[in-house]
Length: 382
Image 1: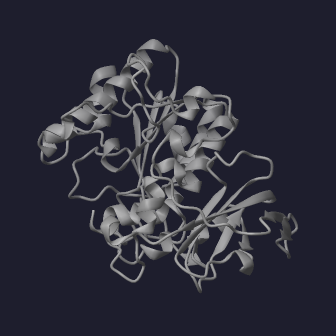
Image 2: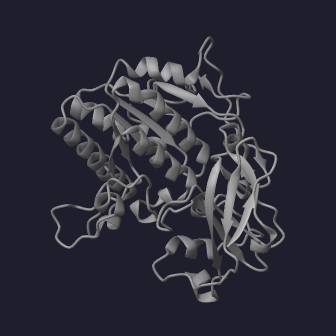
Image 3: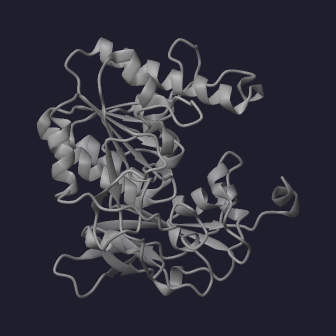
């Protein structure tokens, strides 16, 4: 093993790096690594799934210039809006359901959700419902059970717990929730054969209804529970859209009679130098969200999001001996002694010639290196 420490820090980050790196083929069922293998950074990166894959592997910097999720959306600030988290806390006292949305391409939104989870716990919020969690039907025999179901006491998530959980920021949100004592529940629609044959509007209605019903059933079965619900994009919409579509929050409100506090992180962005509350754009339906959080324009340093440094992460260089000669290489950092099945504290994909940093809280970490062979022409054509 090779031991390295980040210098110049009052609290150190110590890396335990493998002495040698052995390339291994991508497992046939690892579709996330296969998706990365098919991405060529020299080609346009505006495709949504490309953006989500790169974000999952810590490379938001490669999509920020082309992704609509990073494009500034001007919204006037709320005069005297006050501290964003304090406002959420005060409003959360008036309900038992708080719904916070995110962009699936911006890790900062997950960091913000973790801050909300910390702030709400003293108010009695005890359940974190996560759209991304795999949600098998318990009535179906011989179903795959995700690790969070089989090993609920683990202090971390595993990649198989949910699609977006492979991103380190999402993994940290889960770690934070587990430490705080939240009960973690899924609520995603369970797909049935033939689901994809219906029209887009029918599929939206079916999915939003299924999500809302599962949450409503949980609330009915757990009197006194207080829920923080983590969703993507429009699922947090509290009133019907202009085209009449009713998303999950609208349906949950109708099913339960509970007026949730809905918080959007995807409506306005880039309006200031720090988080602030913004006015809902005039072209949106009134009451679509209760609060609109406007995050500053994303900035990057050595290929990584600056917000994580501001939140306390240390900037740690990847040893030159571990940088790739060709193709993608994924560097993972887990707390020393933790199983390799866990979602790491940081996971970043790098290419030859890049000086990309790891971002880690103080501590000791075991590094893992995964080489990603280029996709074959047949794979690229799929």
